Image (cartoon, rainbow, N blue to C red; front, side, top):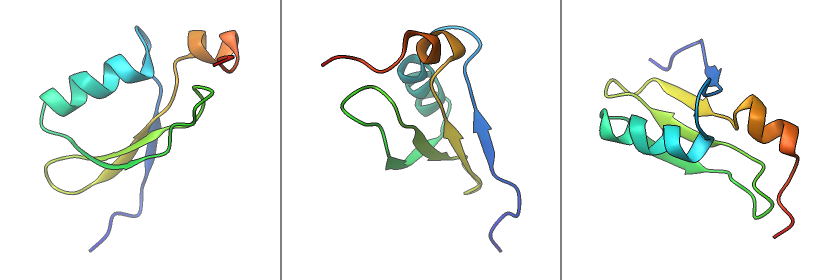
Amino acid sequence: VKNRIHFDLRPSEGTRDQELVRLLGLGARQVADLRRPDGTGWVVLADPEGNEFCILRSEAEVAQGPSLG
């Protein structure tokens, strides 16, 4: 049965990509990579039981705006 709750998480320290590496090291698996070339977007992960959640950019990354290339 698919979960009815889906969390969108923002790292409080570091970047989205650093948090992605950390979570993969803890046993999460990547389901979809929806990052865009300008740095916006998110990554969909699943925990070891298959519960999906997203990692968004940190507040600091959002404040910087999209990358210029």
